[in-house]
Image (cartoon, rainbow, N blue to C red; front, side):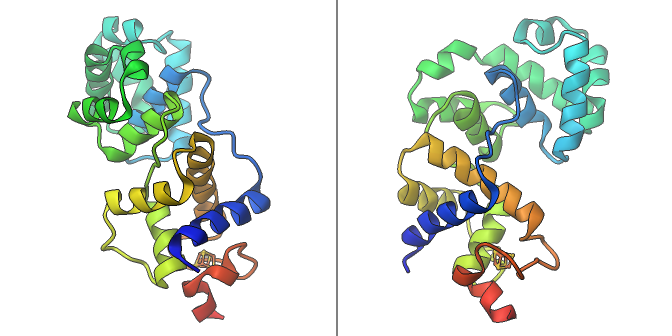
Length: 218
Ligand code: SF4
């Protein structure tokens, strides 16, 4: 089975096992952007706490973030960690990103713009593009690399670059936003439930039959 066919099969098997994921967990596209910035180096649980505090303080829109004194914003997002740095990143994002402008830009231009902003790396930029603006791009994270390496290469591969993995998934799934959206969300779910960093639960894994790593464990 080629890697391309394998990725399509992976999407089918994970969808069957976990159902529709309905990502990103946010009420508005702007909230997706805030969540994507806050989730750097922390768990989603902590991001949820920070967003809930921002909501209470009326800080979930760009002008509110820009007008808020730094200490008020920092205090609201404190549960997400690195709160001083993240408060600066949020303000920087709101200063330099004309929200409606991004939706009208080409994918390449929008990505280049986001990547030019301080503190926005590939994963954050692509999460914003896919989940806030519905642009057809695949988001790669540590979970994706782990599962990809184990299934197709039979090992935890550290050599894979972000762009390499993104390109392989996009070739397999095409410019289909719904599939790209679901695939990333399903991989996150799968990494949490089965393909854990240490001691993956290969028994009962929906990908076991196609996984080189899992088959070698049996
Ligand atoms: S079989 Fe094991 S290593 Fe392979 S995807 Fe499943 S949990 Fe991960």
